[in-house]
Image (cartoon, rainbow, N blue to C red; front, side, top):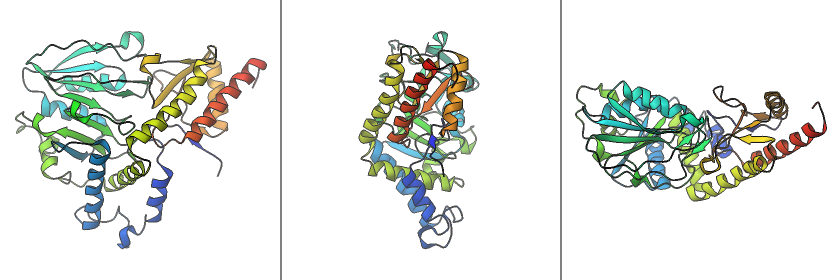
Length: 366
């Protein structure tokens, strides 16, 4: 097999160690003679996986006892609606900070449920930065404040989180959860689709502070109530068992790597390697995000012309670099360097970028 460098934005790279472990017991899990995909979610072998994954997540993120960890389905897209259903009471307002397409979608979906407000946005500048966070005065009508911690399409990321004390801070962390240590106590609820840093698609992690669930939800469908899943330990309906099994394997790998502090150091090193090429290219590579808002997960950039963009992407694909095409709404290039993307892949991309620049400036054809 030829060398492949996986920079897909999602579903994205998984740790090789986790994949190899899954491969080794794919058809005979825990000596059951069956795959984990074939056994009951009520069986002891599966329940061990389920609760171990919850415990590992609590350990790695240092989640306090007053929080619950849930494994749900429907991706972050369902959470856009579900959190509003459970938290947005009548006459109260859901506040949204817009930093990209996903925060726009979260705002739009919540607006179908109740009153919402945009409190800050960087849309007018093309979502090149995280907007300045305004000072929030205590307002009894605030139901919550919602942010998207990392923006995969535009390549921006919160360098520090706003401090909100009078209402829950809610975060969509689908693309940077587990990439660095975070203070869970700053948040009332965190949700994350697994397919970037946690595992394969199919499971959504929700970390929720129990005391924020004050709204009467008796008229909300049972499966859309957070309390339903808290009371059933995320086993109210059949969970995505294989996705949770793989999540457990990825969490085990993160622990073996030294936890989120070690992972954060690796991620900073990987990102610096590529950003240095952009910064030192004399404008040949043009980063989309402003320096103070750059993402360590998604590095977005353009070349000087659209023709050069196309040539670079073609050369990259021919040499085994997968997923570097920028999102269709932005164009250009995007290197998604989530936790499982190895340092070697980032070094290889750096070398390709340097080589391509040199050849482009010394030849009219590549």
